[in-house]
Image (cartoon, rainbow, N blue to C red; front, side, top):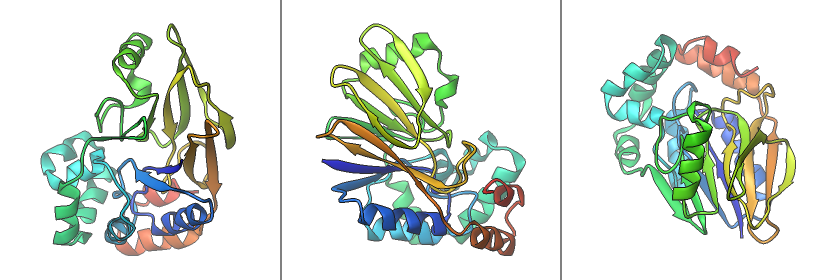
Length: 241
């Protein structure tokens, strides 16, 4: 089984399209999105429509929560709130209804999928969690691998049954041990913040026991232009470079 896992598209249709093209050429059995499909970027409606059209199971991210209930806007800084207000206005009623159906976690093929941190938080960042809390989380989880997003970075946390080891997740293939468990932070399709401006996603191969990190170039200048035209905060364009 080869599963593509994507996260944090953030209304970036150019990046999303290029990632989907790569997925379609990579012999993938299924795709999962970890949420934050909207926010920051200029094409929230187009991204949500494409996810539905492709029948990609997706999760509730903190940005989805904010467009459904304005009380959650309090979590965000000024520019992110401004972006979310414009994003909300750009979404059709049908897309809003779809977003309202999203779950906080999914479990498939011995894997857990969640936006922020397991078991089902869309708001907790993995870097906020202490080693003691990590140990407690791993001992409660029954799935071998949990895929997370939210931080827009690439990171892997390994539990060998006794201790925790954390390290950056690099481009290319990483082999996983069958007798260990993992939390894998898969980076961002639409607004990476790991020092590399390519779109990122991962492929989990359950037969080969590997995680492959893919770096996908896309037309950043076009997205920046669309952000300006939509009147979104300039910082969300600058971050893409």
